[in-house]
Length: 303
Length: 324
Image (cartoon, rainbow over the protein chains, first blue to last red):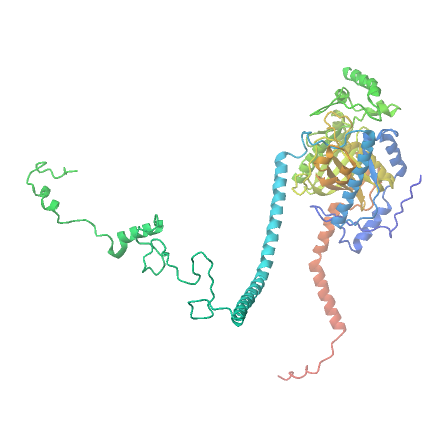
């Protein structure tokens, strides 16, 4: 047999370091000196019946030249030793082992001409139910949404910090631009004057420029057009609350409601039309008949 | 008697059907393959005698009995149910009373159900899960301690695959390094590998099992093979590169304790020298915290003795307030 003999020396025995996740921790990682002593003793009398095991192996194993299709097993070589406690590295190792295995299997299946993967239209019972997969999906979506929200919040925070600076800068820019434009116009005007262009007629001030655009509107003169429905004395220019209905269309609902309420409750409220001396009431003798209607039955009233 | 006759008929029919290169694909239906041979699964599991010298007559008639002990915790029960759903060639049985003679009882039960191997989940103290893997009529059996259990119901394991499709088994290379690993590998292949053309198996291969030895533990993972849809129609080379694996679960880690020659008992062939039982671990931890008070008292007396033996020199100002 080519297999080397396993030696259980005290130096070779190391305390087992198992993984920490899951409910169970076979954690001898906190083993101090006492644990190592404990380990060496049983290891010396551990049973290792190699011949027995090989016999059993021969007994149970399937015939040698059985096609690979029956076993579907692949042996993958692991390049490096993986540290058990490093979760990410361990899972990566398992993942690469599986990936390598599927690649090799895929090649074998291709050479044999057998179908390998499930076609997308093959529907059959899956090992996890549809409701479970819905839960999984909703959880994934929720996670994604949380991440996106967190990103947005972070970005908003950052941009808020920047926005003040940006605003200040923009204002400065605008101010400088305005200044420069005014300067440019002034210069131009001066130039015109210097070059002796005739001042526009009718204007006393030589600085006034004729900015006639040709559609009959004088740029800086007050417009004669009246805004419809605005009384000349209206200081708000027609945009205030309209007390009269002669204006444009329906008044605001709020104004109607306000007027109504004012009339009902404002300044002591509406004077109820409780008792009035009018022509009708002076001629009304209902209350003065002696035994008019019921002959003294006061309970029976006119309804 | 009638069963035996049917069985021998299929044995005769087998050589015509089985070709290694490109077997004729049986008709595909939703429930599996409509196959003449699939009718013969009910035969007793004496497949050792039927193995003929030509491997073309071989038929994997492996059947696994999956049971658990009473008072099993919910997490482990779910693990057991997940294993049942992964192996279409298994039979789930009722809970077994844990008696001292459980080995004999279990072997009898396996015989009764005409299964050829057994996976027995034993939960002790409602905390520790031991898994017995045994080949039944006379085969070896292994006892494992199971750690790090994650069931398929966990929402972080997002993959899904066909129920009963045959898995690809991948073993890490260190399974061939030693005799006991080789034995375990063979047992795992026979138990976890779904027989070809099993009645309840589905045709395509869309998941992979990973058995890997790290730190003298066997780690189990189950991944779904997923390929973007437009590639899976043509099985082109392009699809190979875009293949990704999504974990389906369950996940567990096996720590071999002992290997026995018989099923659920018999001569010990292998004992794991590094194995410490969880009871011992818990006892050690308790002992560490138990001696706190005693240690404190000891430390105090030690300090006193030390002070007595090494007297401090009187400082400059120790005499100052003596009169007052």
